[in-house]
Amino acid sequence: MTKDIGTIMQQDHERLDQILTNTARAVSEQHWVEAAQLLETFRHGIVDGHMVVEESLLFPAFEHWEGGEEHPLTELLRKGHKDLRVFFTEMAEAIENQDAEEFTDLLSTVQTILQQHDAKEEAELYPHLAEALPDHGVEAIQQLHLLQEEKA
Amino acid sequence: MSEFQGCQLPEDLFYDLDYVWVRPEGEGIFTIGVTDPAQTMSGRLQKARIKKVGTQLAAGRHVATLESGKWAGGVPVPFAGEVIERNEALLEDPHLINIDPYGDAWIAKLRAEDPEHALDSVHTGPEAIEALQAWIKRYDVQCMRCSD
Image 1 (tube, rainbow over the protein chains, first blue to last red):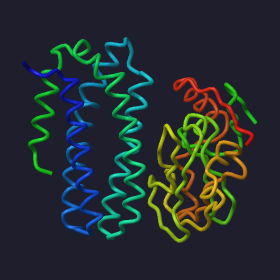
Image 2 (cartoon, rainbow over the protein chains, first blue to last red):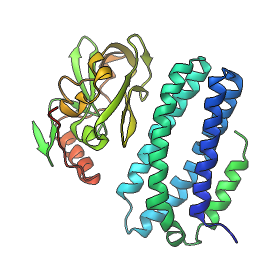
Image 3 (cartoon, each protein chain N blue to C red):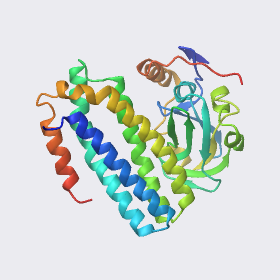
Image 4 (cartoon, helix red, strand yellow):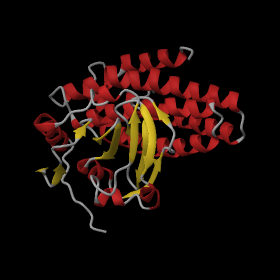
């Protein structure tokens, strides 16, 4: 049976969390080249894939389904994306400077943000997507797979 | 001092219209903190990390990160500059931000790289207060300041 868009997005959260965990392990072992590569895989997956699909397809569909252009939920989620992009840049700089302490501090904050951000999406956004999207999410799933396949 | 849904909004400060306030101190120095509605939305703060004195920051980068049991986030600077002082008291007791966000719980002081344009991206006066009131309504914030 084909998975629905909500399940696929939730699984993408889990996939990305695992890459971030692997990045943290590489930092703790001071494998800086590996850490930089893993962080870039994570950043590409979340910024150029997951967030692009959400911001270009899922959020607008949800906003339309809710009957307006602006919605406090998607506004908060977009703000979360903006903040996270800055944190990812700062984490990359910490790895570049081989500063494990700075990276660990940033990681703690980012993991808390992601945990809350993902939980909000999974509870308040994803359950409505199949209904909100005219094609039940077929295009979004294709787009996510396409972006995941693109090299960072 | 303007007040909306219990949230204090000093009219003489500059705001990024999200979480941050800025106060010019003269000679290119600016104090940065978080707003009353922002501290309310964050919940009781339990952890604060502030960049060390001497750190150079580009505009948009975080001068501090704050965490409560239910929330974590960064405090972005609206202009490029160098951290010249940080509020050490917050490192010991981040909850001060929930008590006095515009006073004792300032976060850091920065020397702007380009003081003349440091306030270009922030807003003040009635226009800022109106935008902050819209922010408070959008996120349905009812401010409460803790006393201890």
